[in-house]
Amino acid sequence: GAGVSQSPSNKVTEKGKDVELRCDPISGHTALYWYRQSLGQGLEFLIYFQGNSAPDKSGLPSDRFSAERTGGSVSTLTIQRTQQEDSAVYLCASSSTGTSAVGVTQYFGPGTRLTVL
Amino acid sequence: QQPVQSPQAVILREGEDAVINCSSSKALYSVHWYRQKHGEAPVFLMILLKGGEQKGHEKISASFNEKKQQSSLYLTASQLSYSGTYFCGTEAGGADGLTFGKGTHLIIQP
Image 1 (tube, chains in turn purple, yellow):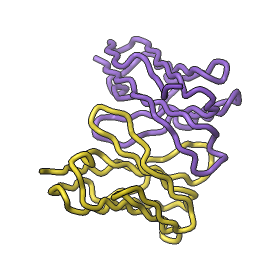
Image 2 (tube, chains in turn blue, orange):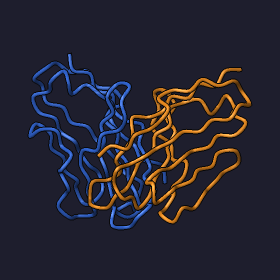
Image 3 (tube, helix red, strand yellow):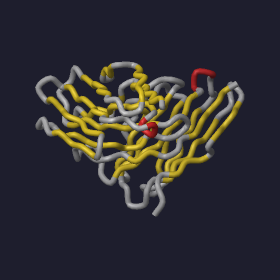
């Protein structure tokens, strides 16, 4: 059906609070990725899910960041005890297969703009 | 390791041509090109697989030099709608998704 969706579109929070960001991938896509884009910067890889396998967490910047994917579909990125440097746009992408298949297009959601005051 | 894009920014008049380069220090399997308008998500343009192939769509094309680990995006007779930030994403194997460059800002003026 529709493309990748993310919610909320904008989130303003106070330093020290926890936030949850949601991603709904394209139906049938087995791979899901989270990226972070700071102002004026490129895209920074955070975490990758392939189906129901254990995720590759190698890109998570600290142990305050965690993510889960329920039923191989919807994913939630959680940031605990938010810091001002966490302010960024968090983008989710999905693809029909994972990185074991070379050259597979990733389709991006609109992103969640997180502002930590 | 993050690929390096050049130039960082380009300002063109409508109808002029532009070339955006992307280079990596790693052996690459593929290069992906995306365009991002301000406040929007990146939109896929094309993928180039190793083999030095060139792809194109209308007036936007790209090449991938496998030996040099470089890719170039060519925009011919640019249109106002081409304005945005162009990112290359590289795939070098492993399970870390795409690694993106910092982007090239393209401004097309009437």
